[in-house]
Image (cartoon, rainbow, N blue to C red; front, top):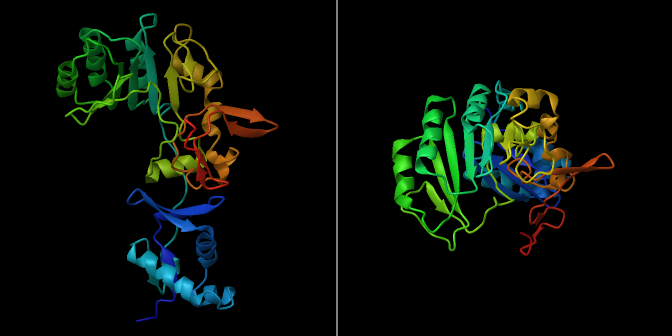
Length: 328
């Protein structure tokens, strides 16, 4: 048996460099491991080299450290030794989808004058699989059931319902909906007077009316999408309470109204897709962040002197590797 001369990370374990700290994304287990930037550099230099060649590159100064880290990575099951490195190619970092839209938010108020069923129908025909119905009022149960019955017959796979807390709110009604409509992924009760808990794992209470600005999600699909696109905005649209199309509800830019044009026309002619293309690698500060390929930030983008910035930055600064706890 040949000596195992090379160390390799598993193909699903990908190092990502940040300004002050780096990570190894384990796309198999959807977790990550923090590493120092010098270790990231070592892993980059290791590509195409044997362990002895790597040690020689550093003039033997880091032999113990190289052995230590390779052993650690083997113990954590993110790497292995081999005598045949060419037998283990890397994964092609490509992403594609045949569908026009993946997810959408539909905001509904007492002032809404567009046909919600028609919007759901258009989204279903465009391949949209995930929907959030955000109500700015407490809807009647029959109206909710009407929408859910349509979704049940559509291509939409999962629906999240977001409702304001009211004094007449009854959790038993929400439990009945969940039991009758299996496609409900979650019911979020916002503006709750206190953080309550439900016995049902698909019902959540929150004091806030906004989504956390910093959300992380890691998988094969999301990682390769994030390399090529803006993962928080890509193939997402929002219909605000007045029927205006936006990239996200809190974005200033409004595109055409669904009462004037169908969604596909708006997608193809109104510039909706422009922000989809701007990945975190192209955004100032974010491009230096080790979390950039798992960050689901939906912040609006600002372009200044041919550089992109996020309007709403999260509370982590990758340049200083510190958190601003006072920032919300």
